[in-house]
Image (tube, rainbow, N blue to C red; front, side):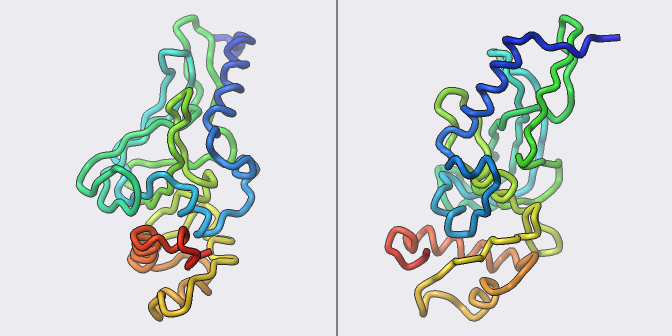
Length: 212
């Protein structure tokens, strides 16, 4: 039976990587303080929507555990990604324990609060910039920044709790559907949300103080 022990230096490295994986993210994201739509947009380097094509995990060349996600992008509201391309990134942690060549088992699963990904699901993802030291990347607000599409509607792991709390947009910028969405609870129309995000980014609503 393989040993479940992991060398102390490997545990220390994994703990260090959790911190590094969150580098560039606000400290409160690690404790899952509620992030509203304004924060999700403002803190993201890339905002993409599309279908999850592939999810794998493993140990990189530095001995660090990762989950690798590949998304076929249908729309990109922000970043250098383009619709019709595939975007691949790695976030910290394994999907399941991994047996090492030594016979030991690495148990460094993705921490609680990190988004979980499944092949075939359609998502909207607000992504932080990759961490400088590791290249690892995750969603803004962790699980809050990954929205799953189902039957034309989207919600995050928390049923969009707090997503629109405190969001204010200058009068005249929103359509009737968008105004109704910002006062709603639970899953919302995907096309309406994606359209609002695209205009907020392209027209610099947050930078101009028109969205806060």
